[in-house]
Image 1 (cartoon, one colour):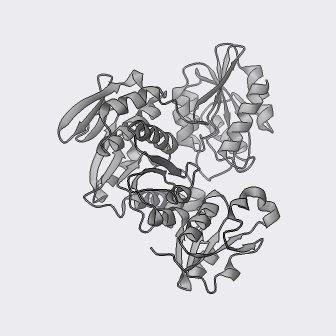
Image 2 (cartoon, one colour):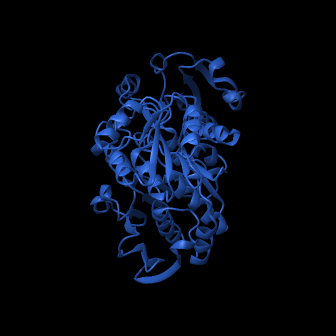
Image 3 (cartoon, rainbow, N blue to C red):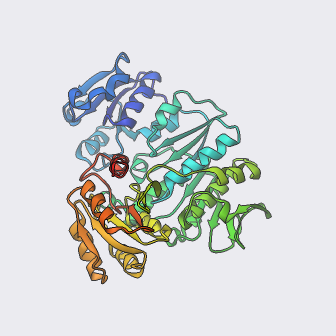
Length: 453
């Protein structure tokens, strides 16, 4: 796509929108930026755009700015059925998003990862593997570093490892990864997508433009992915911690085995993988597949699995105080993610749950907590979903429930409940928007509170 001299309206001045405006202007587009917030409300975040000869239209709705535009670039937070977006399409504007623009204007090889959970850990691990292999690597996308920023400095020999969300896929038409990995699909974001069928289709759009020259990597253990690999045109690899796969990575007798072109290589023993938990074993297996088809030698993959420490806000040990270990799993923004965190706990644990309501069921989590009440000894509920979670827990027969009005109060209650040898785990199973800007802010606040105890 050639954006030179095209009139482009970029709506939403968060990180990705700001980066898209920079990239488009550098590509010769005539850019107008828009946000419902005023310049004063957006503050210093717009400083990087000063001097770029952009037209600023802030503190006003976007629908009055469509006339005369060629392209509309929307934030991932704006649904495609929003009235002004539908109006733009009726007017003949090309409607797209930052991810798509960055793909069109970047140079290099793209490895993309999507799924309900495990995305951030997997892309971070892949970034480490490729860097250890000596490749110039950009870890971008939904992880927080906009694809567009890296696209401006990219070269043909570079590698992009991109975390892709279902929101971003709503506006992706030409997006074409050389290697695409789907970690898992469980109930999430139904307040946006409506049904699991629509949510799954958004995930599968990542494979739509792949050919027989490309690779698609699927989790063979995840029931939500059943049958999906049969729909892609690319070459398929699978990974499994429970069974042998025809091509891909799997576990046999405590060893990670890579099987490609009918040949097997032992990568490492499972206990050598530094990041803990069965879910992280799955993430590691998926990363092994992607790295191998990108030509990374097995010894480099092995070294990376042994040394990668994991990511912030994902079952992150914060502190041991009075014999109690505090874990920050603020990235546990859905039920399946929290289930995986619960699986990782091996000591008695006080669990902090609750947050923004994404219109999902907590029944599966409640049943798991009831079955593992020897591990999850107490729960402390916060946020908008606290009453809903309490109802679900009580229906499952679990009644070790306490409420807190703030995260600080929750941590203080956990300290009172937890005995030496226990854990305190923040893994809310919910988004953070009822109390915090995002899960990162929630995690940072939790760590600050814990470190002040």
